[in-house]
Picture 1 (cartoon, one colour):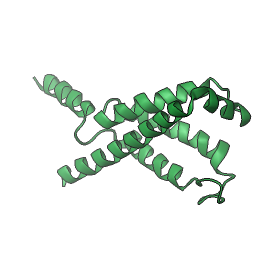
Picture 2 (picture 1 turned 135 degrees about the vertical axis):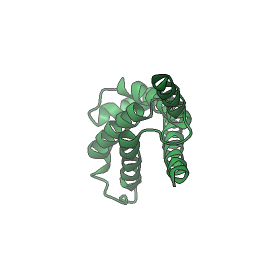
Picture 3 (picture 1 turned 45 degrees about the horizontal axis):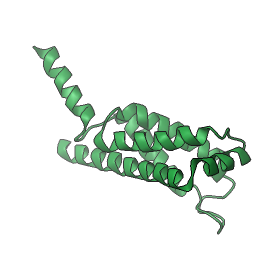
Length: 139
């Protein structure tokens, strides 16, 4: 049962990491000045486009390998909640025909919240460091 939990946690962590990494890459490919302009149009400072895009790429990669899982996931929860309330709520749960709704955001928030609470339970850098610390403390 423990291995199944570790596998499930690993799958959630890697899927969230890939999703956030992909979103960051898309922002960068679209041009961060363009994204910054859109951010400004919805009342978010344009420089945040750079911070968010880079964090999505770096944080996404960190989750894929399982590094600092709780911290990165907590930051993603906050970021996704801001996006949900600032942009997506007005569109509706499943969208308005012009764009995606907030159903994906809600699923990503749930995954990130789970990882914030539980941390890395599967195959990850966090677990390697955790095992190393626990081995030293028992000696």
